[in-house]
Image (cartoon, rainbow, N blue to C red; front, side, top):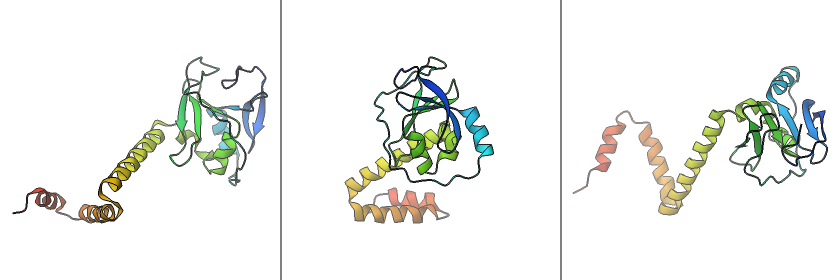
Length: 177
């Protein structure tokens, strides 16, 4: 196998942190994890404590890498909106490439048992929706100011609990004399 990160050919089977079977590049220390092997590992592995990770992660600036199995471009997927960690995912090969330190970071985040969910379209869509909501909230805070925004948010929450919400909205949308 050719390393998708550095192009090296020194890739060998290993067990990465937590005992997960993978293929590790001896040059850049990245790891190729097939989801089928990951699922088997999860079934056999008791709950792992999430260690703190203070190590370095490789900086991956390429927008996409080539899958060493299918020859197609892999997707750069987000793990969360609060962390810059992005993984390279090959849907065709059903595998994930972890750059140096990324698996350990996933462990430290307590998301090592969520890899199937993370690579799913639903997870990625939820992250995009949450980011869009955060951007909209930020824009409204800038537009109205923090105090006014907080009052409006409280009114919106109160209004959402009312049985006649649509009538109240219609009333608010009419011009006052």
